[in-house]
Length: 321
Image (cartoon, rainbow, N blue to C red; front, side, top):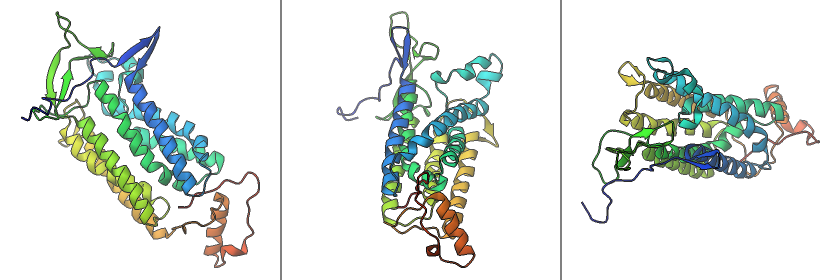
């Protein structure tokens, strides 16, 4: 092994710090950093699509609140033994700060929350989802570092230079268990699957940003790319993981969910592409209700130009590329 390469990547020995009585948890900070990044990126993309960029602030509270609840519910349902099994503690299901947010529950209920926000404020849900996709991937990449702090979600044992040192962990204190001499107890070195996923989703985010500049996608297709791109990597990484999981037909449940979501992404991409809703770059963005009227006019064989503009107060822009 080259002396320039480390024997293994380090892991933190502590993931909680206290400001007086207030605990500051690294896992929560990583999630919050991801949320901030997603909001900023989405705001910039909404501006590029003809919006003001402020639309995301109408929707974010709904998406975040629903997403956190959905992520925790999915984690508890897909890994029920620590909560409902022998020696399990149901009250631990409420301890989000100890880690455990399932991405599929977060995306599913987060999407529901975003849809509610779009309906309440008159925004286009499909356009919002397209604008959000790269930012959501960046949020996932940053959020995965919370697993690094918590010494969790790693793969099999490894002696590769990029293997990850894992400590015996006390989730209650948010710190490594220490031996009689005060040294953190090391379990071994393992595949850093959190790092693989973080790097993968960043690559998918960059690919989507590049493609979205060069291809006129139909509304909703970019989110389809997100679903397909993320799940391609997640299936491989999920197979590598060794943390406890429910097994269905010989595979971890998240493998099957990823395959189903990938199929859903393909279906979304194809169906939205057949609609032919590819806005012209630089065109004046229409309020959502005008877009609905325009589509109705097309169905009746009349051009949208026969309708007067409706840009009065209270109308909200939908977003074009």
